[in-house]
Image (cartoon, rainbow, N blue to C red; front, side, top):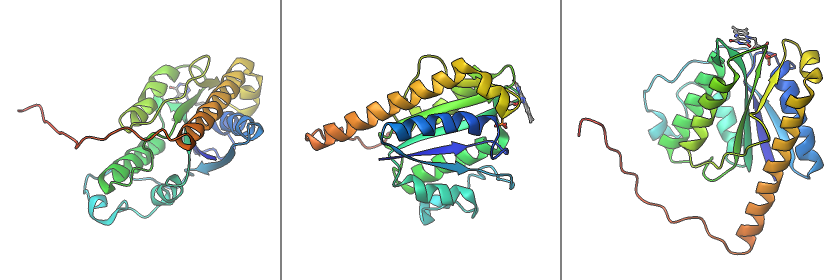
Length: 210
Ligand SMILES: Cc1cc2nc3c(=O)[nH]c(=O)nc-3n(C[C@H](O)[C@H](O)[C@H](O)COP(=O)(O)O)c2cc1C
């Protein structure tokens, strides 16, 4: 089994990465494979609502979003990490996640369906819970079981060295990783035992003018 971890920070080895690394190390000790995907520093456009993904299966912009979507199909679980920028998720990771989840839905790929997910956030000081709420909304609209920890998944720091001193934050990351590993093993055991995926209904879309 394999968990894909997304570093939504421009810092490849910064605070968010330090937290993700703690999650990844613990998942590895639980026998779960990991890959850390960097969104990087190149500009990431927001979703332009062109809906061409519904026809082509891919986002119209050829960048890390499509690279990630290719990997996501085969991943068993996901961790999305973001630094806090002005009490919200960073602009780049917000654009990235809008396009990943919108193109997946319109293309009917279902790369995220009933796969466990968790958000983690990193801040110097404040805006963590608002950012955590923001990221969790992508999961709950996509039928993803949200894995929790013993506290809200956050670390505090301006540098990776600060994060390494946030012992409670790092413990929160390890507990999260063990809970995700446990869920993945239960899901695998359930499927092996013959538990089938739930019955699905045709989507009903009502706009509020009706
Ligand atoms: C544009 C920008 C806005 C930020 N806004 C906040 C903020 O609202 N609250 C906060 O605590 N830290 C804020 N910070 C600091 C970062 O969230 C914090 O240092 C974080 O741990 C950096 O993670 P990274 O090294 O993975 O990028 C901001 C940093 C930047 C660059």
